[in-house]
Length: 316
Image (cartoon, rainbow, N blue to C red):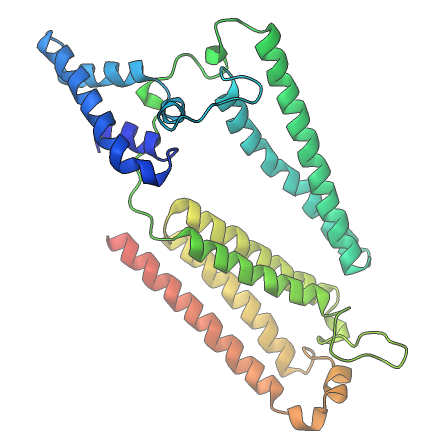
């Protein structure tokens, strides 16, 4: 890809897809005409291309102009820098939320209460980050250097800041959302089965589906593997494809999860005996074998599928 290709791609990614067909030819023609004018004046073609793109400026800002989308919140001069920094900092809010959630579960708090505490903590941290970050930019705009935000970003925008060229993405956003959603369901099932069940004791207490001995050690171990899988799925989307390194990590997590489930099922420590009894235990003697077989098949399929994709993409 040429610098012009990268600049056009960086611009159009912030423009609605319905406008691409009209805007892309116009933008390319404008850039080409400007380059040709400089070349006819005696400039080197490569240097002319760089100068023209530098004069056009930040592609995000140009995209906003082309799409007639105002960049206003605290003011147009600092808007893009504020937005980029805020997006980065908001990820920090997940860390204290996760810590509070994990601490509550380990200390024996009710699952619903622990989840609510984690969500509430993350939301409060996110709110604080958004407020103080915005306040800083408001003060910069009102009382900072009137020349604008160039000092914050290291000077005027140049083509050196264009996004790196990327190969076509092999992992779609839809696949990623579905995978993360399924993993979230697994995590929710592991947590909520202690309080939400089809059967209850005479005093109304829910009969857990999983063996009581699994809590907290084995349940938290499985949750940790699921959490790693969620991070792995997101990293794969960010990379755009499965790599050999990511495939190795996926193999390890699949083996750990399947190993724990198969071992617990083989020693009758996976399913709660009280749950089996309440649901007609004599007719469910086959359940451990089915769980073992199903877990092995699913884990093996996942590992093979990921390795096939990783090796195929590596050859490509």
